[in-house]
Structures are given as C-alpha cells and as structure tokens.
Amino acid sequence: MGIWLELGIFVVVIAFGLWQLHDVRRAREQTRREKEKKRDGARDTSGRGGPEDGSG
Image (tube, rainbow, N blue to C red):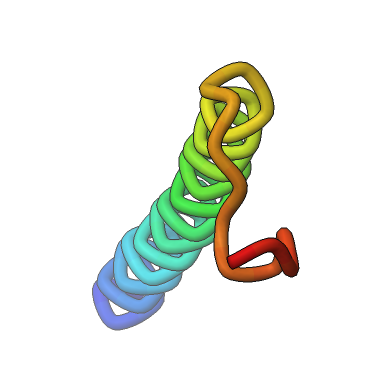
C-alpha cells in the first residue's frame, strides 16, 4: 500500500514540474512577442529606417 502512495506523490510532483515548464515556455514566448512589438513600434516612430528600409 505504501508504494502506491509514494508512486502517487511522485506522479503528482512530475506533473506539477511539467506544468511549470509549460508555463515558463508560454511566459517566455509572451515576453518575446512584447519585446518584438515594442521594438517594431519604436522603429516605426523613430523616423529612422532599419536595414530592411532600403535607403542608405
């Protein structure tokens, strides 16, 4: 009986860890998108073109 209790706790801990990794991955993606949006907005309002502008 005790082995099943330990196994159950182990499974819960593993599931929690995987869920946390999923959350971290999602948060990193959201942060990356926000940085891209901020960077693109700053480039659009700065009046200066980047390398893809074509004017040199």
